[in-house]
Length: 402
Image (cartoon, one colour):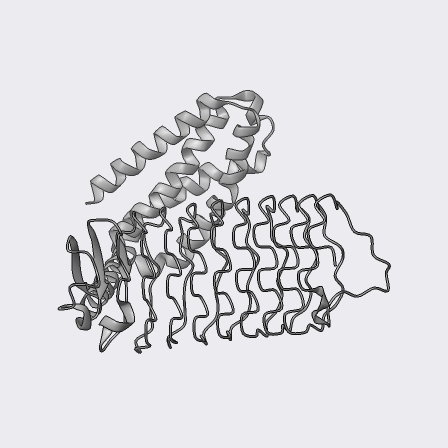
C-alpha cells in the first residue's frame, strides 16, 4: 500500500479501522524511510503473515505500534521491524501461544535497539524466535526465556552478532529439539560465561555452532550425554583460547567439540564435590552458632555496640538532647545486664537463651534510632569513631574467647 513512500512521516487511522486479520498488511510500509510513528494496531486475531515485513527498512521509526495479541499466526511478525535502525525499545509481546516463524527476524538489523521485550511463552513453535535479534549490536540484556518445551530451530541464530550482549539467559528446557540452539549466540563477543545447559538428550545439531566466534567465552556447563559429536559440532569454534568445559563423560574423548587449550572437567564429579563443600560449610556454620563461647561473644558484641553508641551520644550534647530519657536510661542498664550474665551464658547457655534473646532484641531495636540520629546531625567524626570502636571491640572479644 505505502511501499517505498520515502517522505511518509505519520499515518492517521480512524478508530474503526483495524489493521490485521488479512494478509494485505504485509509489506504495507516497506522502506518508508521517513516514518517516525507507526499507526495504531488494534487487531488481536491475526492471519498468516499479516504483518510480515510491515515496517521493514523504516530507518526513522522510533515509536512502534502496540502489539496486544496473545495468540499468534504463522509468520505474523516475520521481519516486521527488520533494519529499523532508529528503534531503541521494542514493543511489548504478550503472546503465549506461538506459531511457526511468528517472530522470525522481527528485529534483525535494529542496530539501536537497547531493550528487548519479555517473551513469556513456555511452549515454542518451529523457528519461532529464529534470528529475532540478529545484529542488534546495542542489546546488552537478553530477555528471560522460560520455555520448557522446544521446537525445531526455535532459538536458531536468535542473538547472532549481538556484540554488546554480556550475559546469557538461563535455558531451563531439559529436552532438546533439532537445531534448537544452533548459532544462538554466534558472534556475541562480550559473552564470557555460558549458563548451564541442563538437557541430556541428543537432538541433531541442537548445539551446532551455538557459541561460534564468542571470542571471550571461557566457561561452559553441559549435561548432554550419548553421541554428542553431532549435537555439539562446532559449538565452541573460535572462542577464547583457554577455558574450562564442564561436561559429562560423553565429552571426555571428543576433542573437536571444544578448543585444545580448554580443560575438561567431569560435571557430575564437579557438582558432587561442590555439594559436599557447601554441606560442610553449612555444618561448620551451625556448629559455630551453637557453640556457647561464640554465642556469648555475639551477645557481648551487641552489648558493646549499645555501650559505644550511648557513649558517643552522651559526648555530643546536641544529639543527646534529641533522644528520649528512656533510651538513654535503659540502654546502659541492658548492656550492663548482658555483660554481667556472660559467665553464666558460657556455662549454661541454653538455660539463658530466652532472657538473652529478649535483651539482645531490645538492644537491637533501639540502636537504629541512635545511629539514625547521629547521621541526621551529620556528625561524621562520630560515625567514624563508632565503626572503629565496634571493630576493635569485636576483634578483641573474639580473640579472647578463642
